[in-house]
Image (cartoon, rainbow, N blue to C red; front, side):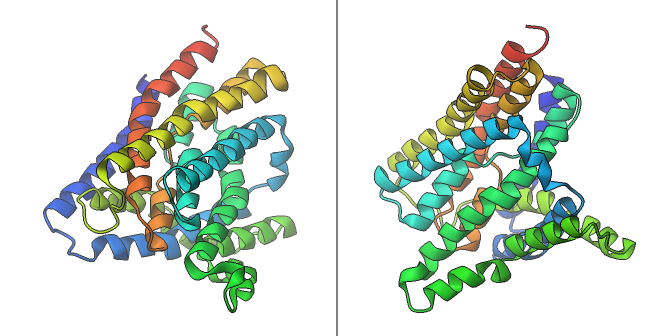
Length: 315
């Protein structure tokens, strides 16, 4: 339990600071918008470039990643379908629902939990890369096409083809892949600058999330509908995703116990704040993503503890 609390504490503290700053008007009326754009366009790309350029994407071939990817794909598709079919969301907002259902908080929560419960964060690093290089481009493509007309609109196909160049998150990831594949190490002054700038991404994102909890535009759906949809998203994220991952990793692939534990714990992590940031950046209803992040973070404390107790070495 101490491992979980140590991982969750920064999330609650920084989100609470953002909420307090918003309630007190400390940062002004435009703080949420400005900080959100700073994270999306500046800090997050720097963090992603540093992470991807120093990694080996070949790690995706590990069987454990197959189990994690299967759970992510299925649950994200379910979240998208539920938001679209049962709650009347358009394509872009349904993509946010899918992301909130299956995109895990692998960085600022996954790493400390993995270190304390699993003993190392090697699998979490693979999860981070998978989400950055495979999941984010799909979500951002849906967001871009859903908010700007996509291929059916005049110039829509060109927009789709040029999106990697126009989107800083995808562009930074692709540059990182190119640097990694070439075996080239950027000068120390570049890597250090990216490290410093990238370190601001997670705390600033959490401050921005806290600011959004003060209310304002973007709350979106009605009270009952919003609660129902958020409840479905949280259930998919904290219960269905780790369950699917367990079934694929254990009975289907027959992975060793420690790998099954790693897959299940990473799949049980709560929704990443990226879902909220993407929704805000594209001018969409942020209510679902915001409530999904907060509620899944609360619920996952129980599901993570249960998973570690059932599948851990002491069972």
